[in-house]
Image (cartoon, helix red, strand yellow):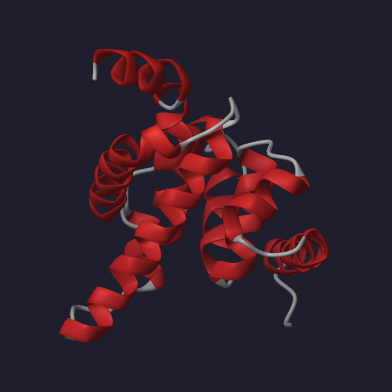
Length: 168
């Protein structure tokens, strides 16, 4: 067990910030992101015996994404409260990555990212903020690389439109 813990700490824990960043952008809510990351880290630790290789970041972020999807399904089943409105999103505290870009047009960028549909937002976040390769993003999302590339292109285009203030 101690070997497992040490290996987990060495391979997975360095990606805790990336896990939170993805969860924060997916949920647009810091409290829900905390819950998702906590659940994902617990699931990751429990499943770590089955992890092979050294590329823990895509593996961990796929778990975060799956925990987010599970949370959404659970909300649907239990008729939980709706997702926050656009005004509430802007009032929520920024992530460490978000704080780094809040100078100048950072708030506009955060709002524009939050306005993207989830399938585009997640690939833009993984590529632009987490600097992941197309292959890693494909591993995280479970989508083919071509789909990742098209979602990224479409997400960037929607982001440009949103930032320019043009109608879609």
